[in-house]
Structures are given as C-alpha cells and as structure tokens.
Image 1 (cartoon, one colour):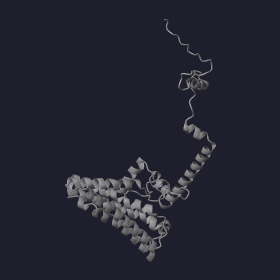
Image 2 (cartoon, rainbow, N blue to C red; image 1 turned 30 degrees about the horizontal axis):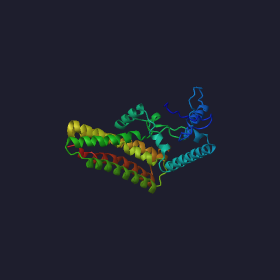
Image 3 (tube, rainbow, N blue to C red; image 1 turned 30 degrees about the vertical axis):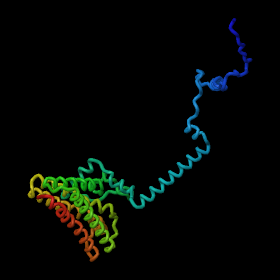
Image 4 (cartoon, rainbow, N blue to C red; image 1 turned 180 degrees about the vertical axis):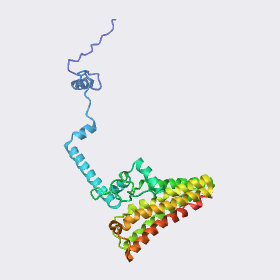
Length: 297
C-alpha cells in the first residue's frame, strides 16, 4: 500500500505557527533597531547618551554645579582669611623674595660686616623693598636653609664620632628651636617693658636671630676638617662678625629715633635701649658656642 500522506496545515500569512511554542520577536527587535540608524547611515544603532552627558544636560544639575562652585569659592576665601590672620602668608612671601646674587652678598656681609657702610633699609612708598633689591633687608631664606644645614652638619659630626642616633639629632634640632623661641620671647618682652616704638616685627627678629646658624655651620665644618684649632678660629671670627652685624642692624631698629636725628644716646630710657641692643648682640656668640662645642672632639 502506498504510504499514507498527511496534510500539514499551512498557516496563513500574518498568523503564528501552531506548532511554535513561543512567539518569535527577533524580527520586531530587528525592525526596532533598524529604525534607529547611526549618524553615518550604516545601519548601526545610535549610541545612547552617557550618564555624564545626561547629567550635564539637566538644568537642575547645572544649577547644582554652579551653587557648588560658589560654595567652594566662598570656603576658599574664608580659609585664606583665617590662615592669613594667624600665619601672615603675604608677609612671608616678602621674606623669601631673594635671588642668587642677594644670597651671595648677604653671606659676604655676615662674614665681613666691617666694610659695609650703609645699613639703612630702603623703602618705596612707605613699604620696604624686597630683599633681592636691598642687602640690608631681613629675609627668612638664609636662616631657614642655614638651620636645616646646621642639623645635617651636626648629624655628620656625630656620625664621625660614632655617636649618631635619631634621638640625639632630634634633641639637637629641638634645642636650637627652643633657644630661638626663648630669644624671640625675651626680646619682645623687653621691647614691651621699655615701651620701644619700633617697626621691628616678630618675623624680623626670627630672621636676624637665625643668621647665627651660618657661622655655626662654618665653625663645625672647620672643626671636622682641622680639629679644634680650626673650630675655634673660624667660630671666633664668626662670633665677632655676628656681634658687629647685630649691633649695626638693631641700633637702627631699637634706637631708631636717636639714630634718625643723629643725637647721642642720652637719658635713662635710651640707655636701656642701648643695653638691650648690646645684650641681644652678645647673646649670639654665646649661643653659637653652646650649640656647637659638643660637636667637635
């Protein structure tokens, strides 16, 4: 018998296959994707906007960003004002306005102050000129670098004697800072008790008192190279030089009125001012020796 033939029903167009369990949605998706063509017209789907672009396109987001920028600017201004109240950043920039020529001339003045004649600080419209334009102006660059170099040289000296330790080096640095702080406080108290009207500021005092570290470095280095003889010779020269330098510099600050008028210092108050000037100058050699004698053996 001939094989039985079954008639497979043909679905009319537009109707789903009766034997198909799920609907085929690929054609619809392809039609949907095909409708969104890229800008090049190659048939690729257009790229969706990134979250950042969508955020920036939102007007509310733009307002929030502007408000945040305004708050940040106000906060920066507030911080700058508070910092300048306690730490005069603007004034500190003046004390670091130096160049190579100024540093060289200032170091020469510290070692050889005997040949210098004009010790007046130059002014421009009631404002002292920057240190790089006036060798007599105080600066903080040389004292800061000299202090750091002094600590390094002290560590070298201790190392050559097999006595180096971080604790001992820290004690050396803290001792130098403590003596500097005591000097500044003592001078400020003396100026207050003597009612001295002077333009000498606290930063000026730190600068002038910090110049002694230059001579201390020279003394310790010569001690390492030539022994105690070299140490005492160089340190003695530097002590006399810093004494002369401080006398000629501070007398124009503490004895400003008498020096400006060219009148000899007379009277009890002026005598006290002169003694204060000499005491500050005499304290520098003593501290230079006290902070370095134990580094040379």
